Length: 410
Ligand code: NAD
Image (cartoon, rainbow, N blue to C red; front, side, top):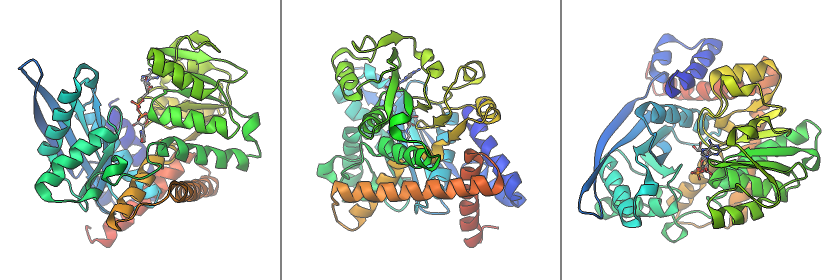
């Protein structure tokens, strides 16, 4: 099953439960607009690199399309479409005044020099620039794109159109970025988990956690969870996993990764294969790497009672059903990984008002918004006796459908 088909499956289930009218099912089951571009980048050796670029605008009924840009060799239109759909449900669930979109370029950025990466970023913005704008489509970072890339894209846009910092979020602070943005996805996921752990009458210090993926989202999550008292017993990246049942110190693992390029061979733990992370003895499993991490063949290894989806779509539908059957609580991506887009919204709002908030204010608003959304999802889960994913999806679809009806699209 393709990535988009899998994500669309969750929508179709919701549409059934909500008895959505046929025209809205049509409207919401596919993107409003897609752009596929050929990006030509002059390379340092005098040749020209040619890459496929995508921007998908899934639904804009609730506000400008919103979503990140990914640079990765496996990016496909189908995958970008699936993330654009997820963004639509995510922004609605968090009650942000945005729709959903996503972009990507099929490229291995690690093979490019810094100058080539800058040219690629500028050419991408140049190619999709007609679609974007502060009240049309607001872009942001994702896998392999960061504040520096956002800065180049911002510069490319503002040179042509004028100074609109709110056209892109996740920018460097000097260009109107928000304090707290870099840590926001990990921090938001932690607020969500901590709310549920306390609600289940457990405590942080008695809860063990395994984190798959140690990039932006995973490393911030692990570091902050450790500070809050959670015991991080395993961490992995694309090269392997490091395990210590007595607890790892994520800041030390991060230093080790910085020095050696990976978490493997960290001195205070046992190194093992990537896949071993799923079977580690931990109360909470946190997939924070790429899509389809948990699939039919490996879901049986999971021992955790909670799966916190920090990555986008890390649990394939068959694995999701298997976890639900076993009573594992899966905290869905559209809730657990929403911290990044919440602080993107706060950045956009600050830019609109020409303000710069203190980090404490940003973090406290993030906490409030993540906890409110978690509470609403839990209430719906209990009321309708469904999973958290089904509840989150129902709430989102309901909200987008209501906006569509109010616009008179029927
Ligand atoms: P990143 O590129 O910074 O990190 C990705 C990490 O995953 C790296 O440590 C990499 O080594 C690891 N990885 C890749 N393959 C792996 C494997 N097979 N096993 C274990 N680890 C593996 O990316 P990121 O920004 O941290 O994003 C991670 C996920 O979170 C993505 O799914 C992304 O869409 C999602 N997400 C990120 C943000 C954000 O603000 N960064 C927001 C929402 C969702």
